[in-house]
Image (tube, rainbow, N blue to C red; front, side, top):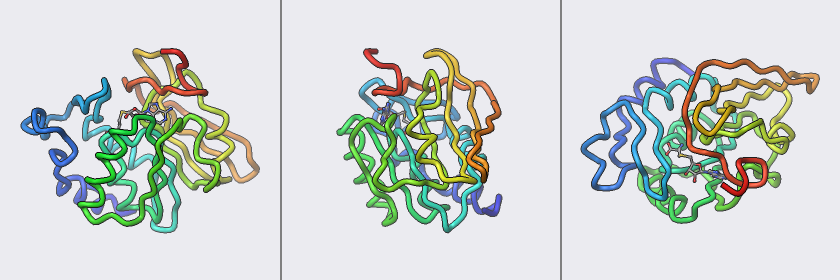
Amino acid sequence: MERDELLDFFRKLDRSLFLDKEFREYADCDSPLPIGYRQTISQPSLVLEKTRLLNLSREMRVLEIGTGSGYQTAFLARFAREVYTVEIIEELSLKAQKRLAGLGFKNIRFKVGDGSQGWPEHAPYDRIIVTAGASKVPDPLLEQLSCGGLMVIPVGTPSLQDLLLVEKNKDGSLSQKPVGKVVFVELKGEYGWRNR
Ligand code: SAH
């Protein structure tokens, strides 16, 4: 992906389209904002950073866990071939579907359900991005990552996480490195923070 293309898209994409009316005036602030149901849209600089870490290209199939507002999804859909995105809160998924269809994206498939278990039917994925914080990398996601694939996921405590870049090497072995401290809402579900 050309770095300038990404920046260009970032500058042109109107974040207010992904916000409810009462928060639209803050769309240009580089901070997370509420999207309802006690969830947040990430700050734009972090979305840019995560997208850059994924090093996307046009042939790739991407799995996203935590559709949320759909803002990050738009970046994935613009720079990859196909995006599979899972959201546990139905209302958020439906709103995101409407927005992204309105923007003309046709390469996104949506699912409502527990994304901590991935989306096995379409695996393996060249890239996986998790937009909620987990206590550890969910095993199903590691299984559903292709050899040579990359995953970006925040891992730590509910209040602070390391953003991890996980690579599944060609021989199937894993390597991972922390690339920064972040604060995301909690990943729920079977392989997330259960009962919270
Ligand atoms: N990328 C989104 C971030 C939304 S916040 C955006 O920019 O708007 C994280 C989202 O992950 C929330 O919408 C939350 O409901 C969702 N989530 C949490 N646990 C999940 C799970 N196990 N499966 C799918 N989605 C989950």
